[in-house]
Length: 279
Image 1: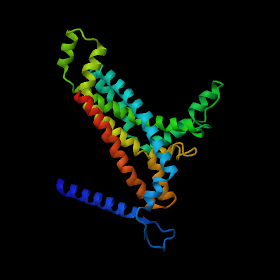
Image 2: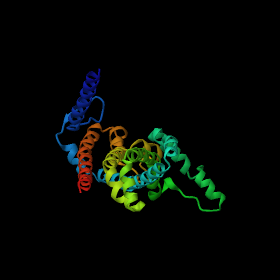
Image 3: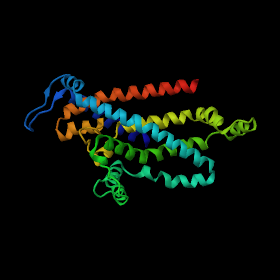
């Protein structure tokens, strides 16, 4: 029963891959009656010289570079706290992971309402206190931190869940022996917990890196890439090229240029972490 399903998924995956690559080698017609015309690597050359493409890549790397460390350390801290609580921690884990079940679009809408300059609860509280309201979504810095906060709202519970699962699976006898030898809590964390947890950390961070690079729904619902492209991550830029400007060939070329970037970033990260594990 499994092989037919895997075969069907593989067929459609391969078909879409080949079709998208073929499409990237053609010029998309400006009118519905015009046929596709072969242009070779012109779309790829245009993408490499496109400053907006480079800007969206930079925004994506900033988004991932700021958000993922925050999400990892916050998730690890919560996981360590739950682990110390024993059975109580296991019961608290269930409501804490509720945020991971909300879609990106839902999170974007929620944070849009929370951060609204005119109607949001934060602006209301600041107004009550006689303080200046903050236009989170109207400034470059504010809107960027808004998408980071929105992403972290669901990514921190995800990190917590994965790392907590790794923590409760660690052998207890090693920690008991270290405690008998007089090791402090900080020594056990740095010399026992983190080294044993590194394989789990690698999996969690690889999943988050790929998820951050593919972020779309949150930006679509919260900022739409505004203001001035400050929050236009690469996935949203590709969407705009394909469905706002109706240039599917160029969007396909951008996608295939993004693919090796993702592979190289994840491969470099895994190699660095593997070196740390072997050391």
